[in-house]
Length: 439
Image (cartoon, rainbow, N blue to C red; front, side):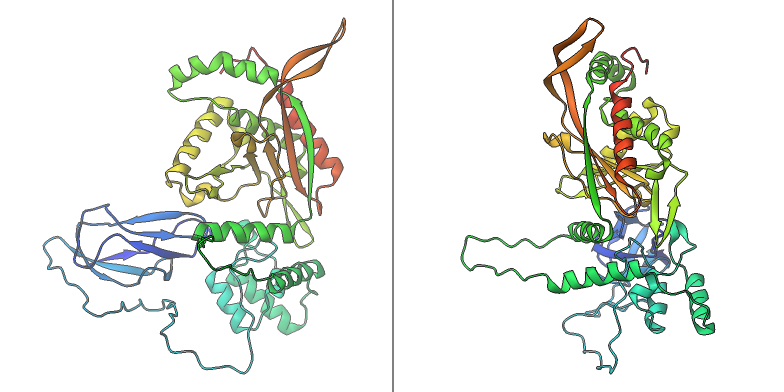
């Protein structure tokens, strides 16, 4: 009998939800054949079988949350007799967290109501199931948890961080909670509590559509970002005629040589990387009253999925790639995003995000910051417009390719001077694009 284990789906992923079983108990399975579909906070994925045989027993049902490393199924190897579990319910694995259904026996009432510890906070921090359980047992509130500095990946709070906090609290040496974090949390809670309920008219003129899992995550993330960061948006208009002419000149030969297309997106990303090097304080995040400057430049590119949802694959160390490398990375990530084949590590650790609203014919937009980043750039549609051209002989009117760039930034740490200067620098790099460049 072979155990099918819940795989580790990324550095910071501790659990996954079973979306759908692709095999029933007793079904034959080939090696590497998908057995079930799972979902994490980051991405959906399939879990393949490590061996050929029969699905002997499913340890969890659809909708249940399973920790990484738990046994999710038993597979009888080749030659063994397939057995099925005739029980109407599937027994959870040891230490698994059962999902409460409407038919479950209600838990006994407690005298003291405990605050629910969410997986993510309004400040953009994420908490593992172990940290949430310890916090709940020790009576640590969400606002207090937000004040703890994390030593894990992406400043995540670990078990050791929580233990140190509890010891300091017991010894009376704990610092006072950061007032700003408490205020953000209280504002978020009050807004959610005061959200008006929508009356649904009766009749056939209304259709009700339940949000899918990804849309719920996007909605929560967007609301959290607005509550966390005071958004400011700056705009510039750029003359990108040289960039457009260059692409028109090279795109045919490039496609024949590389067997793929070159779009404007890698050019935008290259300009962003150069500008971040010039203004590194755009490439930061905030932890309480501390500013965390990121040395790596990891550019997220917002991509629309066929379902209408959004996903943001990340190009790691984008500043170290040349234009050809960026083009291949952009095309590969965009293609796999549309086919839902991204790996968990490919959609995390971004330090700056680019979204191309021009794809939809929009000339500009006011994007929402992708927490815990502090800025996001939107590129608008490129359009031919009459413009003033300065020449040594004097000014003249000509037809130029123009586009708007808009930068939304977190005013807690990015002031208008920094945000505006950075945006202007991106436009400068695009306007000065070398029409004789070789790729």
